[in-house]
Image (tube, rainbow, N blue to C red; front, side, top):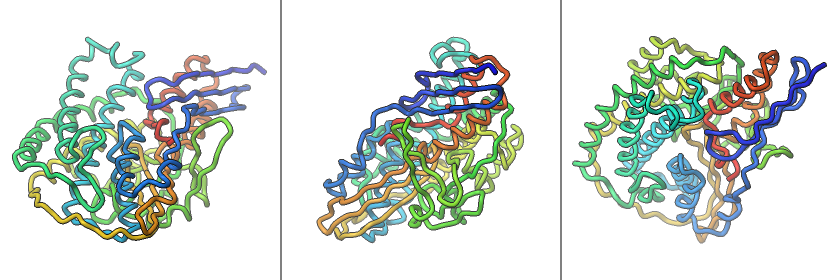
Length: 419
């Protein structure tokens, strides 16, 4: 029986460093490894001994794409540990900042990392000048979202104004009104993005997974809610560690998370839409129907299409928030006390968990961080195993490309996974 060996030494157009190793005998993959070889960065270790109010700025450096997610998740975990309930204004501003980051992240993934796959280019640069219109659209939208993140967080990358129990600085009414006008101009670009992504020649591949996301009764949950899954899980975020666990594998620097009573899971845009599609705006749901997106959707390649729909929703909600937003200075003082708290948020790539134990001096004694790519790791491998089995008759180069495209469809951040 002939054997095929797939060896992708460096997976391009993803965040971080990973390799893919597969051996196939007949139709069956004998060995399949997603080898995340980026060196570990020990954030959980060196947070111990640091003051609690240093943590949000430190963990924002875990990722240059989703610093807002790490910052806001850490802030919520610290506040829960100390019994702090921030104001409604603070919660709204954090949501606005998180939505702006989600849209920015989806834009980069769809246009710069995923799109070249579907048109046969090695990268976005090579798509010029044929795709000048599309890449110009990307730049217009990205600038507006960067401006919004900076207006709320103090700067577009690694924001500085979000702190425990509030913000150190508030944007001016004039700046917010300008952003509202700018967002209105980008909505048509977002609609065009959805239609563009819907025309990608996606692989005809389906595999049902356990989809996991945050859920709330009255809004599209990003930072507050219960953890739910397509298999019936419905738990408070405080109980995360009772229902999820991490495991080490010998060939990877990253751990793999799974549901204790189940197994591999999928988080991210597709999981969110499979679980809370009805909470999107009517216009986004209508556009989804027009482009052929239906739930439940079991094709992991369609995570790209789900991201494009979230992108449009994010722009719409940012506009809606800004329309009537009036900001007032607030007292952000609080009492330092000992405690332990965990928080879950929806990062662009999916469920993000932070937990901290803090002593009476406000110093971190224990830290635990579980990132979206750690949650997705095992499911990427399972999807890849089924994809290889389904396409085992193809030449090795075509199998390798399909595996690369599948991994990229998850929009993984391998740098985050080795935090």
